Length: 394
Image (cartoon, rainbow, N blue to C red; front, side):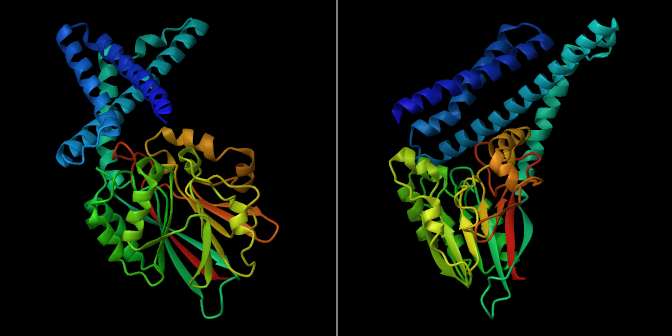
């Protein structure tokens, strides 16, 4: 693991450092050379680049104020510098396009382009606006409603309401106050049960009783159910699972159980293999389940196992955050929505539902945009959600 971390850290420094260098040269072309502002930018960049990484290397739990300050400063800067980089790249591509048009048409459209200084102000304004707006978007958790009709509810059960949270990332940025905002949406929906589809935990939660008490205070009729995500393993899966159980959750690890007339199945995140855990094949968990009951599959990553299609009615997933900050949205689409088998399942889905015919039942998939944030505590064009699923009698 140390070798893989060293490789990842080296790549991180190369890519993140390259972004800073690109921004520096664009700013220098606008304001000119000068050792004072150059030294300031270099020192500030190095500090911000290392701030978030220090949290990976050192346990600063005994100095929570320092850890919180490093978290906010490092990750907010990460969002700001990425957005500034994106703006400069867009402006440079626009300049290149105009240059090609001038070259082909012998025109002089390039004379209409803004000066380097004005381009720098445009880029800075864009980055400041989106970072500021994204702070508020990330805190505006909204309910997203889905209705799934089925003929597999038992007599006497006409509707079962399931609330889904995912990718909350409780840690040193998202704590009790932010979690309470999210759970307020859950309380308002009055669900029968709550499910958490991974990445609830993104740090050491052994001493975090306030957050656990918020979950216990929900007092839902059918309880709370959870599965692991990749960040639970990064944070330490044993303490993450212990926190969930302390919060009143039943953690499903490659198993299924009957709840309120339906069957809820949950599988561990594939990241488990990297940490030496064995995973039971997903279809082996699902295949023995009865056909006449609605099967709700909880799975963190929105990858659909072809062998499992037809053995579940609805899969709830998260993981992608829908990019969290545009234009990362397009990267998540390429990874998770355009694989051939997934395109067949979800030909026209916007962050959401997918359909497929299987050997025993129609399988559907919903991919939530996530409830919290990872890294920068902002979202842009990817509002956070609590998914409210009504399973109703057909």
